[in-house]
Length: 483
Image 1 (cartoon, rainbow, N blue to C red):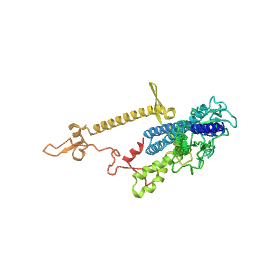
Image 2 (cartoon, rainbow, N blue to C red; image 1 turned 180 degrees about the vertical axis):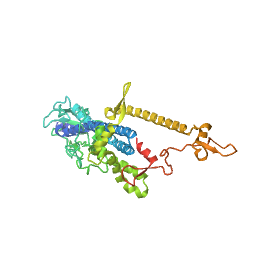
Image 3 (cartoon, rainbow, N blue to C red; image 1 turned 45 degrees about the horizontal axis):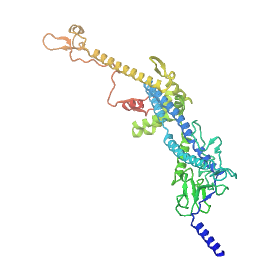
C-alpha cells in the first residue's frame, strides 16, 4: 500500500512536470504615469493650430506688402519728377522684399511629425484601456492609484486621451515651458510606467524566457522599443517585466539634437525649428500704410536707391551713393523727421482709376482698397499711360512733319529780295541772266532752341543738390520699372 502511494506521487509529479508552464502576468500600467504620455500628446496636438495661427499672420502681412508694392509702383509711374519716381520705385522694391515667409516648410514638418507621435500615444493608451474592459479585479492593463480595478476614465483636463483631435482654433503656442526646453522634452525622463497591482496584465507575459511560444506576444525577453522609441519594454517569465520611458529630457543642447537617430529626436528638432521660425518671423506691417512707413523709416527705400546708384556710378563716385540716395529722399520728402509719413501720403494721393463692377471713376490710391481693386487700377493705369505715350508720339511726329513741310512758293521767295535775304526755304538762283529768289527743295528748318538734345553722352544731370550725381537715362528707366 505504501509502495502504491509512492508510485502514485511519482506519477502526479511527472504529469505536472510535463504540462506547459503558464505565462506569468505582470503588473498593470499605472495611469498616473501613463497620463504623462497623454499630456505630451495634448501638447503636440496644439502644434498645427499654432502654425496655422502664425501662417495666417504671415498671409495678412504678405497681402499688405503686395498692396504697398502696387501702390508705390503706380505712384512711380505717375510721379511728377525724376526723384519722386525713383523714390517711389525704390519703396516698391523694398516692399517686395517683405513678401517672404519660410514658416510653411518648417511648420508642415513639425505638424506632420507631431501628428505621428500623437497617434502612437493615443492608440497605446486605447489598447491598455480596451484590453482591460470587463476584467473587473481579475485582469486589466491600466490601473488608477492602488485600486484593484481597470481604469475607465482616461481624460486629462478635458481631453480624452484615446481620442485626441487636433485643435481647430488658431492660437499661439508657447513651445518652451512644461514640455520643451533647450535640452529636450522636459517630462520625458526615465521612469517606470508599471503600477502596484501584480499579475493583472498579460501584455508582457512570457511562458519561458527566450523560448518561443504561440501564447506569448513577445518571443524574446530582451528589451524592445515602442511608441517610436518613447517606451522600452521587456517580457519576462518571472513577472519582472519592465516598461520604462526613454529619457529625452537631456537629449538636446541649445534647442537641437545634433545627431538624431530616432523619430522622437527628429520630432524635437522639427518642433525646435518651428519654434525658432515662429519667434523670428517678422513682418513689415499688417496693411499697406504700415508697410510703406516701415520700409521708408527703416532705411530700406534708401538702401534700394543706394544699390541702384552704386551699380551705375563710375568707380570714383560709388562711395557717394549713400549720401546721394539720402539727398534724393530729402528732395522728395524734406529733411524733417516725418519723411516716411510724407512719402506715404504722396504715394496714396496719386490719382488712379477705381474699377468697381461695371463702373470706373477717377479717385486716388487711398480710395482703393484690397489687392483685387489695386490690380484693376494698375491695369487701367497701364492703359492710360500707353495711350498717353502713343498720343504724344503721334503729336510729335505730326509736328515734325509740319515743320519740315516746304511752305514757300516762288512768289513768296521773290518777295524776300536778293542774295542774303533769299533764305529760310528759298535760295538765290544765280545761274543765267534772269537771277531770282526761288524755292529751295532741300531746305530743312532748324529745330527750335532747346528742342533737340545732344545724344553723345546720353546723360541727365541730377536735381538732388549733389554735384557728383549723374544718372544715365537707360538705367533710370529701369529704376522706375522695379515692379
